[in-house]
Length: 79
Image (cartoon, rainbow, N blue to C red; front, side, top):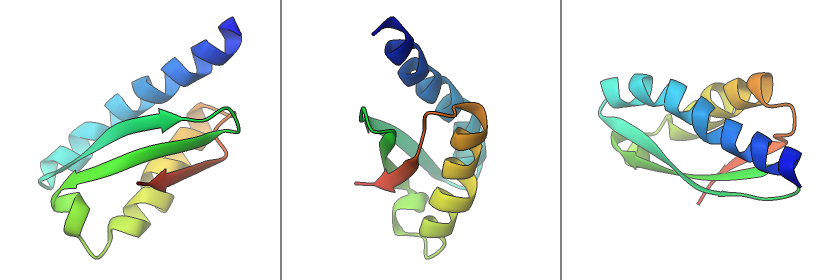
């Protein structure tokens, strides 16, 4: 159980690393939930919430970065 908590905490830390890039474009990301199956739920905010490129930012940016840093992450979804 302690290992599980550790990887979930790592998800939050990695999101903090990508946050400045999103904020530079007028957006942000909020961590909503990390499920036991490796699904990370986030909410894109500000300019990211209405941007036509938001899905690409989510999958090619946030999800790719999270998967490279936290192997337990299987998917990132916007809620």
